[in-house]
Amino acid sequence: MKYINGGVCAAKGFSASGIHCGIRKNKSKKDLALIVSDVRACAAAVYTTNLVKGAPLIVTKRNLSDGYAKAIICNSGNANTCNSNGIEIAQGMCELVSEYLDIDAKDVIVSSTGVIGQPLDIEPIKDGMQTLVASLGDNSKDAAHAIMTTDTAIKEISVSFELGGKTCFLGGIAKGSGMIHPNMATMLVYITTDAAISREMLQKALSEDVCESFNMISVDGDTSTNDMVCVLANGLAGNLRIDCENADYAEFKKALNIVTTHLCRTIAKDGEGASKLLECRVINSCDKQTAGKVAKSVICSSLFKAAMFGADANWGRVLCAVGYSGANVDIEKINVEFASKAGRVAVCKNGFGVDFDEHLAKTILLESEIEIIVNLNSGKAEATAWGCDLTYDYVKINGDYRT
Image (cartoon, rainbow, N blue to C red; front, side, top):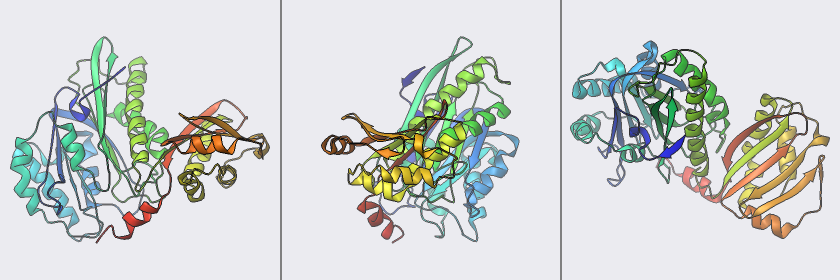
């Protein structure tokens, strides 16, 4: 397994582009992305559980009913959600891709991200299609830029790995900064691979992975209306097709998880207004479900997030979050430590506070990446969740997001 460059264009047979077409007022910001496979690919996706769903998700779900796709189109600057003609616009975007790439409109995944409840004019998209298609190439970063909203950094990764003696590639891009609190998928994430795998096993791998990756992020407790994670696998690597849970399937899942975990960390670190990445690792739990509940509860605590912003080693807020998590734990067995590249400090043992060096703790918590280790001392299972601190800037960003 090796980290390589290329993002969604690392895998054989994939190209991408990203342009400014005019949806966003700021001409320096790209707002339309396209990802294309040379051949029809197996496809898998997971979607937001919010009852209010963006029109693109509804259209995409219909298009992926057969488990195949060839292209992904996404605009930023407008979510195309809660619009009376939203389905018509989303279908229209698919038809534009069909027209310019000479493919079936049902082989298109369509996404939108941005402000909810604002009409989306398809004309800028229509006017930009020729340039968008002409720009297709090794341009993963352009596509990653074009799907950003309040993101401050491009989120991209790719890896190479071996399946049955064949070198395969898997890469992804993501957007996500606010409204991050998933319960099935999160934000917008596009993953491509040239590995040969059946659509059933691809869906299984993705559905299993999101439980340990994207479902373990929380920035602000809000689940978006447009969240989606999708994977395209075109099989051009030439490996023996994965159609059961064998060693190759395990290796594929490992590569997928490396990519999704990286994207999780970059999304959490780039939370709106955030200055720190928080990683809560729960160890020695009686089972994985309990560990997951505890880790997510700690990451979601607004009081704890605020304490981390102030570099305040207020471990009581960790215990408080564990206590209301709904997990069945023995509080009198819990140990808590804070760690970063500046060091590590124990702040709680067996559910009670211990004497610790406040200056050292402050130094540890002033770093940009903080690890919170919660030891339940009840078994061998573990889980990790990712989040960020809560800063003044989060309110500033969301106070005038629409206007």
